[in-house]
Image 1 (cartoon, rainbow, N blue to C red):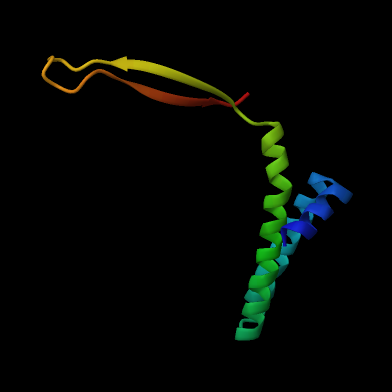
Image 2 (cartoon, rainbow, N blue to C red):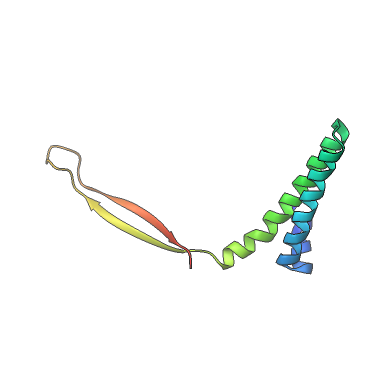
Length: 98
């Protein structure tokens, strides 16, 4: 489902694909809510899954563009007594959204 969704995103843009994905997911949910049954459930799950796959495909490029800056800090740590394990450093990764 990601390949057709990617083609949809390339042709119409991220915003339009996201709106379409939300509408498809909503249509799948409403179809099951209004007509509960096994066949409708299977069909509506496929429709909702298609909408969510399209939504994921449309959102990933936007997250990559607006992504976070990554800062790595290295904090040295030494044990209190010399009989313990040798000193090691703790790495902390902080993401800052701009």
